[in-house]
Image (cartoon, rainbow, N blue to C red; front, side, top):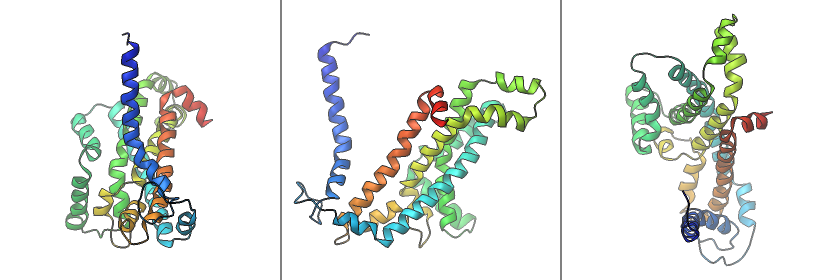
Length: 270
């Protein structure tokens, strides 16, 4: 299909406007982290790095960052284990209720976060009798992080086919030997990409966190929401938000690079 020059220009303008609407607020957060004013004002009244210095020694921000990193890491490990097993089962085996299981695996990330949060909170507190805390928060995050790993594993298994695994079995290799030497090396980049996406999703999750975290468990998004409207805290919140943007964007960018081309992903890992 051939597109005229005027149409290309119009599409370029529309694309630029959409990107500006998406990223101008993020740019404003970065600028305000260096603004001398304590209010979220525009244009900036001056330039200062004092908010970055205060954020660097803020104990509440430190604890929140450490909690978010720990929860995201634990949820990612859990998602990698369960998502990989689910992906292998759904792609390599046929069984009764397969489509239903596939729907149930994907459902947590498709449902509104508040619905998932309420359901998990009720399940932990009312049905299981588990006290809300760090463990319940990790489990809650893993429920939607599994989907990213599951989708990546399934997509890679579809492209791989089963010829090499069948050849390995014909040559006498056991199931775990075939998985370790044949399947896993081909899944490495997909697992890494899925794990990075899962980490990013968990790190900035706030809705499910609000319902699944117990007293005393404060992640970085919750800390930002709590301190945003406190007097004198807005500039420090901007600094922490900039750090959060970097931590969230980096794994997503790397995961996109790893998922783009299997040959590039293998080269990137080596």
